[in-house]
Amino acid sequence: MTNITVFGGASLPSVKSLSTALRSIKAQDTAVGMAIIKMDKTGHWVFGADQTEVEEASLWAVNPFSFVHGYIAWGDGEVLGEKMVSVADPLPELDMPPSGAKRGWEMQIGMTLACTNGEDEGLQARYSVTSVGGKRAVQALAMAIAEQVDKDQTQPVPVVRLKKEHYQHKSYGRIFTPVFELVKWSGMDAAPVEEDAEEAEAPAEDAPRRRRRRT
Image (cartoon, rainbow, N blue to C red):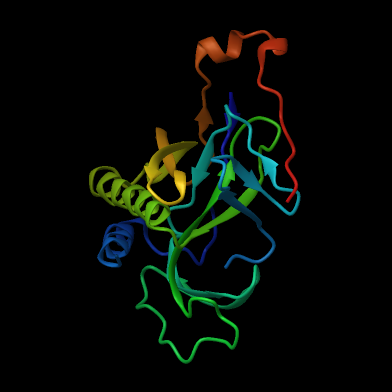
């Protein structure tokens, strides 16, 4: 049993305002100092400069006030420009994309998560995505939070497992897409996260080994 990261702060808007703000993300078809988390092309969830794989049994609390939308411009493997704002605000206005941008401005949505157990407990990470599958996963989670807030404003924080699914593309082969598997709802203050008894009793030698992947 452990405690999830507290998403406190006097500058946070009211929980009641979440429902409207989060639903706005469905109509759309940066945090400084945080690790970047993503799903790589092989379907592994990784974070940080060393592309460290997340632990299979790890649980992540999603900050419901962290959802953002906007645009990003990619060059040759580097970000040339980014305009992101809270989903409570209108999309930012666009000017000409930066010189060298491969696809111009691309729609992007994102959020922040905090690991609540295991080796990476306490790690906060930013997840941003431009792919269709990734945006659908974030939108689905946002809708779930909005519905939860309508029912119970005291438990707006989803605690999820980072999963994946895939489909077969006729040109690119197997394509992996993210899944945020809801485990429980929690409050904004610290709340216990209980592991499944079967997982807790498993011998240490049977635990999956961490792999560190480098690009």
